[in-house]
Length: 90
Image 1 (tube, rainbow, N blue to C red):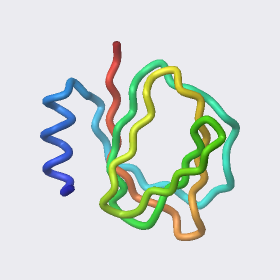
Image 2: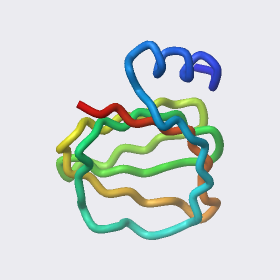
Image 3: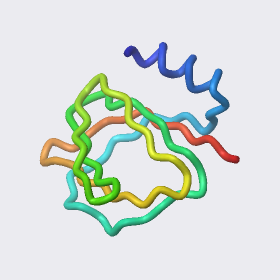
Image 4: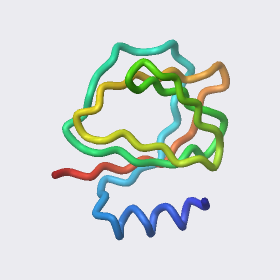
């Protein structure tokens, strides 16, 4: 999926606060939850996410999503990551 495709889909699905982020390398953070849905696209390198104690790896070109209230944690690998991410409030 391209960035333009995802941006159009996110807007159509009611997501707002679309932003590109550069994430520095870091070990896994403490588990937490958002009060909004998150959906995004990995633009470069990788992002690692744990949901319900299950590790999930996302690479460049892959879409990730975390529903509101879902506990999760993230780890950013040694190369860092670039992502496009948006929020959907209920």
